[in-house]
Image 1: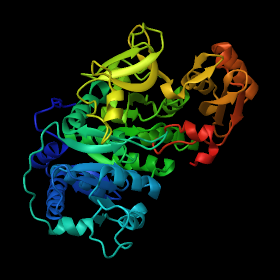
Image 2 (image 1 turned 90 degrees about the vertical axis):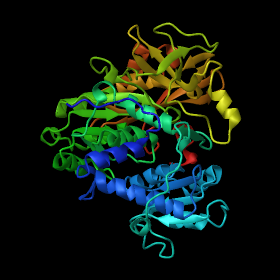
Image 3 (image 1 turned 90 degrees about the horizontal axis):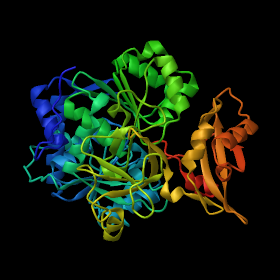
Image 4 (image 1 turned 30 degrees about the horizontal axis):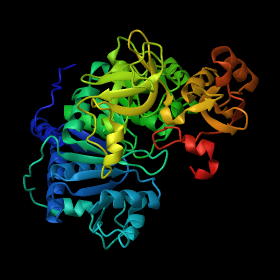
Length: 519
């Protein structure tokens, strides 16, 4: 495989890198979607026209522009055009409820929203109550819903060339709102340097890809993992991104084979769906050399079952929105270790500390704290939360609890705020979930605390069986008793058909604790 330069150059962001690819390889496929191919030359020209169109509509450097669309070429063009114009992209998942979208648009002060089919009418209705939102543009697929609104394709077709603007490395490029599993989401300020650094960091070790690779992207591009590790890194090296708007296990297997996909960027829900559906076929995966999972923990049983059929071992990474997002990966070790999220990426400093701020020894639990060029510039309009997020020596407090072995491999245990306290002893849900998922009949497990009059809290587990498997609850109780301290063992194990998750498969514990909180 050809060598690829990973160095972050001053003033270089993904739109600069796109410009370079458009000049060097104008006819090479950049995007493939719904049978249509967009070359690097075409994509660069459309991003130029999109940036000019935004400038003609009064968008200036620093203005926030929301993009509410799925995994589509329009989303790609819009986000890159916003950044090339020096403005700030605010990507939003189209499956968010109107109230959630309204909060982000108001909090970010977005002046314009570029909206796809799922939320075009809802966002248009919000303009009356959001004084900052003065402009709505409809993306491809939503044109018939708002005939009086301008269409993205028409704007791109009629625009001239953009006016060059100053885009410093430390300038804000994206305002990405956290998943909001508890309370209202906060906007993480990601600079051009943050995003570019993590594109390069993400390509380390076995994650290295080049211009000959074909990358499957079916995760929502509004999620920072798909946006920067997926799209950003793919465009940086001139590879081809195959965009799939809606994931279907059987259909996507065919897409992999027909497009010669070499790299899969996925989340646990994808891999579990493939395994669970029986859609996996070794013959369809012959082109795949690398499969990556992120955004949420992946059960070891899923890794093993995927490897048995395809011969491909899924690599895992760990990160968070505030880190642009990648921090560690199994690609940094000689061979992936299922259950671990690997070692830190280049230029990432990582430590585990106890409640007193002291660094813990190997084998002891501690909060993961990180520092590096990919770590964000703080929360939008929230100086108090920004100050609380960092230690005095500049490390980001992730809120994640982990443990490292003597070789430095990191294993995540849970969230600090998910802590369950039984008789004064700490229980991290991830410890219990790991034992439950080790059972061959268990596909997924979620653990939460429930109030108890004597112990303060008690441990409750929810388990999803694999299809055509029967879970023996008594066997699970026995396994927990053999592998966990007594106070960590679930007092109740309920069988359920599914667990509440975010769009990228992250468990929503608030919904487990309170089913009335919604999907």
